[in-house]
Length: 213
Image 1 (tube, rainbow, N blue to C red):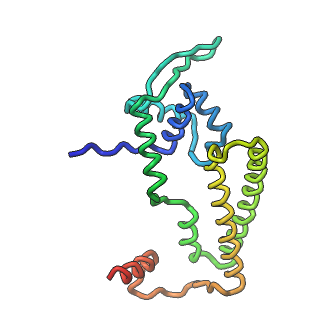
Image 2 (cartoon, rainbow, N blue to C red):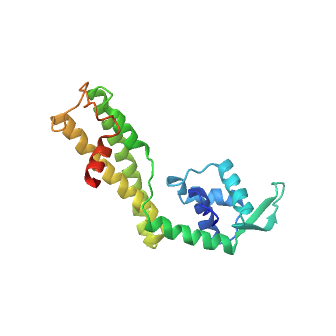
Image 3 (tube, rainbow, N blue to C red):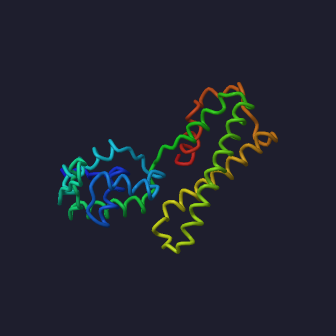
């Protein structure tokens, strides 16, 4: 039986991406990630980063190449990527680019649950989301304008650009949803009973089954 493919977590991918540049110790990794706003796309905590580094070493994806001590600071272990780590990183990058993944963001979960709220309450919460998205988009645009002034290759910050465009799309979609609910174009179900043969989460499944029948 073939061995199961070792999947790298998003944080592990971020660590190996950094180690393409040069060997680093975990504290430096954390500082560079925060400076580059990697925490916009990867959940970054010092404890989890150290744990991930240890796991990558145990799996043979990175190795210790040096130890450093400066003054009274604790000794720091410097890691570099191995050939196995480089190959695994490249293969997973190809897979992640080519194959859409089934991801589980919170917003669709909340939208599914929204009909259980009072309509006015749900609309108020959607408007709060619109305000928050506008603030984040404005912040993004300040950062992007500064990046553009430095004439940096777009591929160096393409992840940030993608997240920014996602936010703009989400904002437009949510604003339209609010407008449709307030105008009545999208009726609020309230306490309307669903047909017996349809449960709350099987409506789309019912349509899919009809299409494949």
